Figure 1 (cartoon, rainbow, N blue to C red):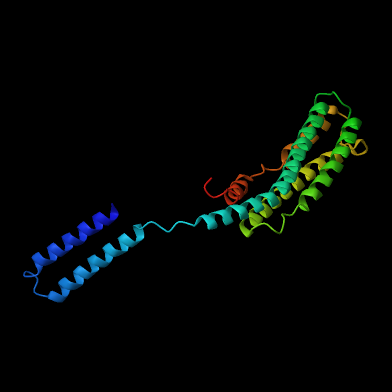
Figure 2 (figure 1 turned 90 degrees about the horizontal axis):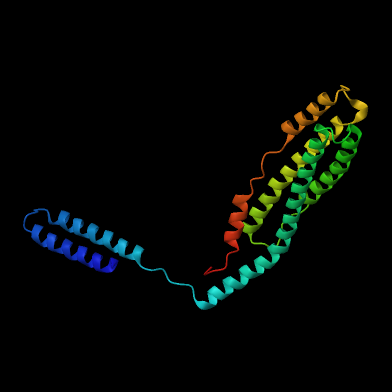
Amino acid sequence: MSIIISITVIAAVLIIAALLWHHIPNKRVLAAFCLIIAAAVAVCVWSQEPKSKASPEEIEAARAHISMQQEIFTPWYNEYQGYINQLDQNWQQYHNILESFNEGASSLQTTYLRLMELEVKSSQLSGQIRQHTPPRDLDDNIYDHAASLISKTSDYASAQHQAILETRDAADPAHQKSALHSEQSRELMDIMVRKSPAALFSAEDISAIRDELRLPGK
């Protein structure tokens, strides 16, 4: 359709040029005008021509490469998902410990011991995430987004660990500022509110990686 329109435009330009030939004294201006119009139409036609399609061999090679990238990335990402699940479990346990103490269902000593155990788990998990670097065989774009994902998650895990650590220290029975349960609970809850990490924003990196790993034609 675009070619037909272009031919029609060129024909119209030629007709207009013929009609103006005897009315415009400067023939060079008229010729330049016609050349500009013809060039503009040619550019439009060229830009609207369908681009050459990849050959079946090229498509198959691209699919094979992306399939290989998927095989490299998937085990790494599955392990990463395991770390995310552990982060969620630790954070849920942290809230449960504080809620139990706040409601008087557990003593300060028990709360302190539970926070000590959780702090060790949190510290180990933070280190594991930090060392979970993406495979070097990934394409650059995929690797960069995976590295960004780990960097954000590592920062989140570190902030989570710091909150648990400070709460554990504040729950130490040997270093209490007050003997009142309400004051002790208020202090622990205050640390939780102030030190809770911001949400982990990973959707952009994950979406970009999925786009990179999408097979041609999918």
